[in-house]
Image (tube, rainbow, N blue to C red; front, side, top):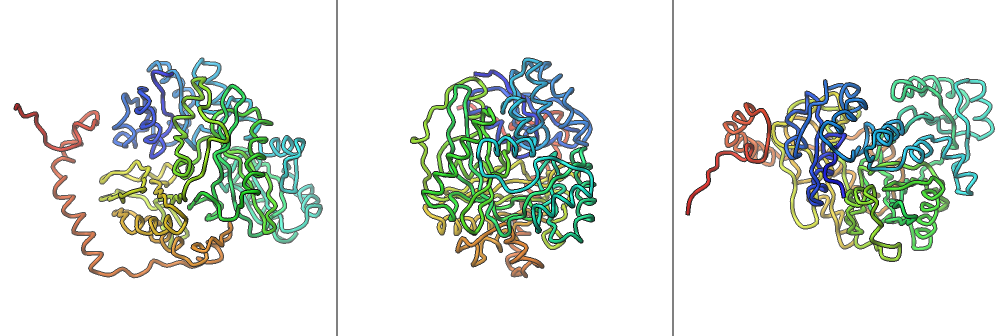
Length: 499
């Protein structure tokens, strides 16, 4: 097992990985940008190294600097989390050349699954059902027009070099194609440095169902069942759950075995997610492989009892999977809500500033993966995700009720979040009945507005925040003077009493 791991990330996922390492008895090195010097992941790591200025290219995307710090701190492995360099095959290859273990798939497998068109070609050759569409990228309008006519409208225009909704456009007619192509190419070039695009058949009102798969270096591949991720805004997931109400035992078995075939065909090891679209007729199509730990991995952890981050580390260290397919079971129902620093009344634009007060919900089967504390600054430089709220219930209705209560007790003051919006989605009759698809927000929440709050409730929240601010103001001033944050210098005044 490793003695030390460098975490090449920030925020809640860096905190999550550090905690897994602590439970495994592994020392951790955290890197941080100038704006993250008081971040929670910096406070809890065994050692910390300033990596650079706030812009990601100068810090969390700086491959040379990260490799240098790993050598400097004698870290044997690097965990990339998600985002930033997590799916960068060049970074994985660089780690391999430098003798550092990359906690994820090898660079060859990552390059294959990261190439959307290449993976489509591979899966098609392996008789994996794929969405009808192109298998070559283009940057020429006339060629794209011909392909669109072959596929048949509506079509989905996608960037060939990346995902996350960047460069995606739905095109319903030939009249819309040129504008969509130009806009998609501009966005793709800005996000990925590659403007090439391709087309797929647009499947209307599909469900987005993904399977968590894990594979070791000894040929063992196991899926850990599905997650339903159909609640999305701008092609970005915001609520995930497991199991999916759309799957029966027969379909679940078929999709799970297909996901394992995808992983084997790719030569993939470690944790990965195989994503599918499921149409109204219960036909499913391979979408892509996410070659990293997913934001929504806690949903799977709750229903299976398997710690995915620990398994990632153990597999990277060469260990065998400790379970077989028949050993893994789904128990109960789990739901995750992603908490973003966004204004849901203003097209979900980022909300920046200082979080003056945060109170996270607690209780049986309530989990918060977070990098938050009162006084933390939300920066303009990074993704606006703040935390993840996950609940488990004996069944879906139980989980929904627990999530509603948890959202009601999640208080963040100083910036705007979409917590009230998430609560509105959870309470919607169509969500509660399980009647969801990727158009859910567009169809049911086109012009959502914040509900009016009871003035007594607002007064209570402000009173709690004021008391917290008063009680901690002296301590915060003292902390600000510290050169390095530790749990001991953040808990306030304390002393050892002799007995």
